[in-house]
Image 1 (cartoon, helix red, strand yellow):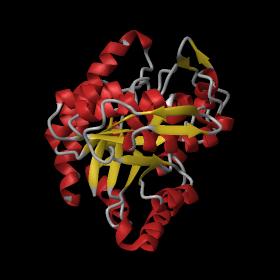
Image 2: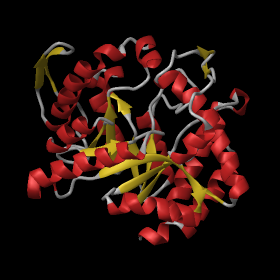
Image 3: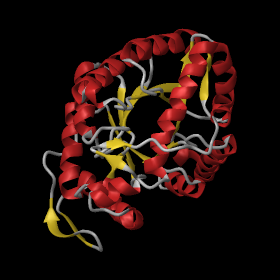
Length: 338
């Protein structure tokens, strides 16, 4: 099982500054490469201070310029928010400027507030995403593309320049629904998924859907991969573990607001809302533990065939703490899965 660092931009205190957050993300990417992580992932979210990155392809290029070989993955580019005729050219440029290290993770969007305010309501995002994905793939792989559909209607065009990676950059599908995972795998896509802070049985169904689809495909599915994102913190002791668990509970008071809640945002900052889930219940569904405990917890993910675990570890702590934690994880946990 490989490991990935999620460059999760979180700005609970606006006075810290967006520029400093971006600098921290770039330092995290360099640290991840130095420590032997396989990849880094980059979110796309707008108009809010959580998962804050409105330009994932620009960030991917910046990361590639600061590193040498690590894979750079979008997690995820929200296709309904983009015009594919423009976005396909931007993907091609990012593929060139990252020297082919870009892996394009795509999804339909998750936060209703964000989607509605940017003119692509969540209620229509499924059909728009499906058509956008088809248009994007054709623009990346074909010339003189013509399309007449519900969301796009255009005469023949050819994006220029063409991608460096042929026939196109690798695409990963982000989906949580196990049937969506199965369908996407059967279409030949790698998978990004997460149970968020849900019951562990959810991740088992997600992985099983991917593995069953691969088995159905035979040799054609042999190289397809599944990445799983979890909140992970390698604690140095019990006091550190408890402190990070409390920070995670505060983080989810904001995340739940925009994911399943009313989307209350003031001047770009998400309002923390009371949570029905207790800290103890949250503890059971996150991977916040000391190194020995993490090895035991991660063993099931390895045994069930997760190809790459995405470490989402930005709970609002400072950059030095993050670096120390990644070093601890790389030294004390990763060797058990080498």
